[in-house]
Length: 53
Image (cartoon, rainbow, N blue to C red; front, side, top):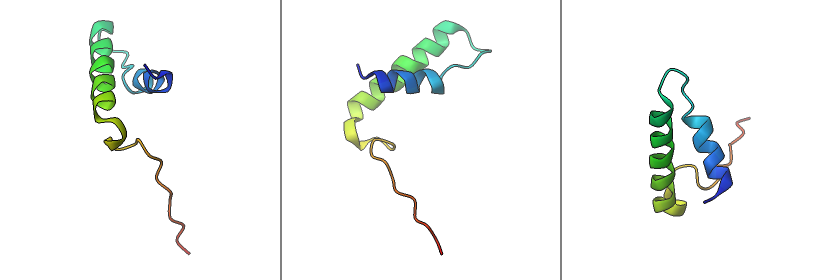
């Protein structure tokens, strides 16, 4: 699996008050969803910010 996605999953789902097995299940579910969607998931492609003048 992609290590960058794993790191992002850990960052997203590391809630201290939830049990570890819940956090791990949430991470696995998120990774499975993102890998299944491929490049169609929301943050797959960087979006350029428009600079308003």
